[in-house]
View 1 (cartoon, rainbow, N blue to C red):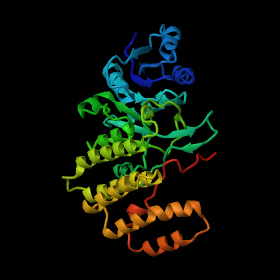
View 2: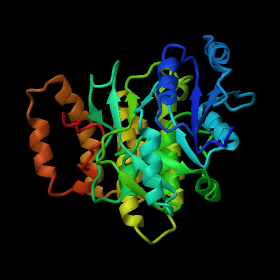
View 3: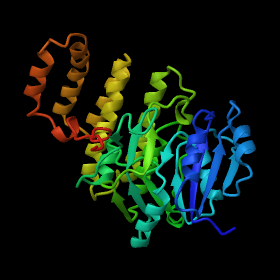
View 4: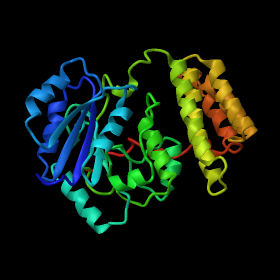
Length: 348
């Protein structure tokens, strides 16, 4: 058997319900030179046994089990990277689907761009079947991709890129196994900071389909209702991202401004869950570290309770009037950024 050209890496945990459809979309590819690495994260629903018994005879499919800590999709993906024999890598979630020409088209564009480290293609989001939701993951713009990622306007899904394995290893790009969630967001940002060479084809018909509203996600298990722990973990991840550029002069002001919005989102989510002191501590940090001005700080401190008031009493115009009055004083790029993720429908 010839060495595969593309290695697809899928971590899975209790995915008996969806895994058949996902694997079928890979086996239906028009390009045949692929291998599939399925990495079990300790499933308890019989997923591993089912895949081993039904697909174990296919030489293109390799079934691995995580046998050491830590648990999670990141560890499984890193296992897949180490085991992959293909020149190119695609990371896929265990309930997502690929168009039949996905591999063929991505390779064709790589032949036209041999010096690129990775290429990016678009994703169409669905719920139960393709076409029932029809929102694009995101759309392209002239803005710096890293700036968009920093404020959580995530430009591409994890399955959107096809990577040259050699380029990932040369840049020492691995998934951070210490992260319980936000691992994709953090991985893309850290990768972009290494200034890789890449091209985007987000204008083309999507070749990856992402299932929305997953249950039992590998990355979200184990936190339950401890919202304070979730927000503290998010803050820690943003702090580690800030360390990537805090001592750089080039673009640091732009990066800081966009990252500020991600901190603000944490603060607002904490406030909605009645973590008022935690919420205001985040805002105070931003002001003292000069992420935001004092006017921005005052705007956010007052905005939080007024937003709750507006939700409870939508006819009250106090918030709208106050917001219009403050708009001239605050940094609009931080307070009112342009987010396009999951905002644009595929034209039918």
